[in-house]
Length: 111
Length: 117
Image (tube, rainbow over all chains, first blue to last red; front, side, top):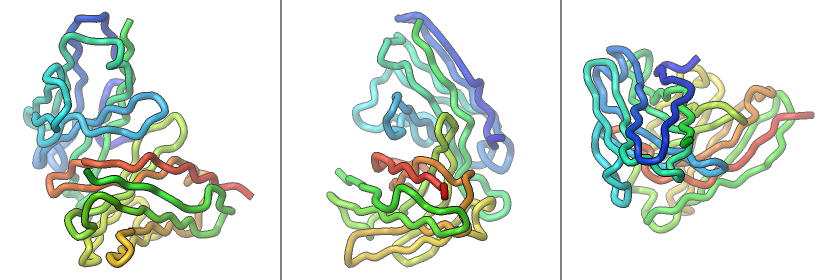
């Protein structure tokens, strides 16, 4: 059972816009920034969005992030076949001792 | 750009201690926080903990009693020890850099550790 809640799956057709939600609580998303990771099949995760809505160098602007209260979202516009991957949200959690918590991951399928 | 490489035994017996090392290249180990993350086959990511070059640590509360992290600045390496392992500890283990905001910026390729007799 993951601390952050994501839908297990999402799908879209090429060119569509898809959003993936991430729900948390006051001790994590509500008081800290959210980061998103993309994991292509058989590879290590890659940082996709940091500090709620910032893209690392090299990440296309088709990817965007937002946060409101204790929830966050990842949006992918102009969906491409190479976007088919698992996506994870994560944030610091201030309960007990400070630690990072992840969502359970969302498998994105490009139809 | 920082590159990380995990190394260690791929097979550990139940009740023994899992030991992994992450070697850092392309950057100074003194410049970041360092983190371990694991992923059981077909499942999600679990953060294990972080260490700074000063030796200060934070561990996942669910693993805290069994985890020890250390850093060797002379070798540009940091390490993970997980004691009293069971089959539930079988996973791909990743090392990564951890920014103050909590983003895991650079990742190693991961190493599979299987707990089995």
